[in-house]
Length: 254
Image (cartoon, rainbow, N blue to C red; front, side, top):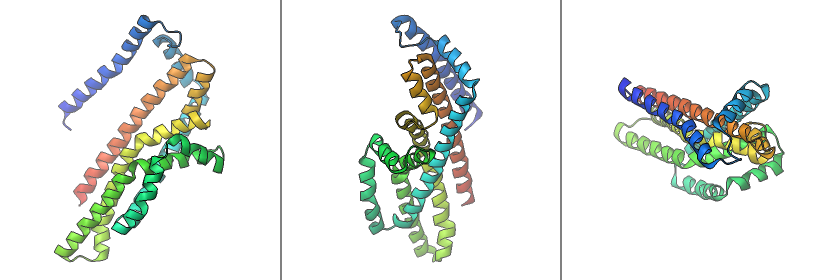
């Protein structure tokens, strides 16, 4: 991406960021709803939040469960895909259970984990892992099938052996597919971590949001939502940058 495109993207992002409080201020003037705090009130609550230790502990918990669940979800999905999903029989064996679990709503899966394990960080990580797996499975399985198809083609043309197939075709494809799967699953992981806090009471930003809502502290609830959104944007940008650099270097190496 050249400097001109980057400058335009930064300018558009800045305009979008500045427009949010302006629209919020105008909405507050027009509707004067008691449930909608003003921009000033939210800003004051935001400053109070970032000055306190509990907020940083909650943010750390959310990011930790997000990253752990994301990494575990991608590793498990990639391992299953490149073990069973490369043949038609294996693909059919895995696909039906996968479609069954994907059809279940998240709100139904979380209580099952709570009933089985109890309310703990492990539940949050497992829930995020499962959500990432379901989000990225189709893409990673397709990547596994494509990589083995290329391996067969190279065998017929070049006559390379099994170890060379794994080294030059399968392993680079698995790494590249995992990186792209992480980009797809990043938003799901972060959202699932906050979701678990809201609906299961697990520590994190989600739990703080629901507590603020229940105690009718609207300015605090809105401030937490704003922070969660900003952190999410930063996290997605970071994952996207890592995936882009990884994919480009991986292609160059090949």
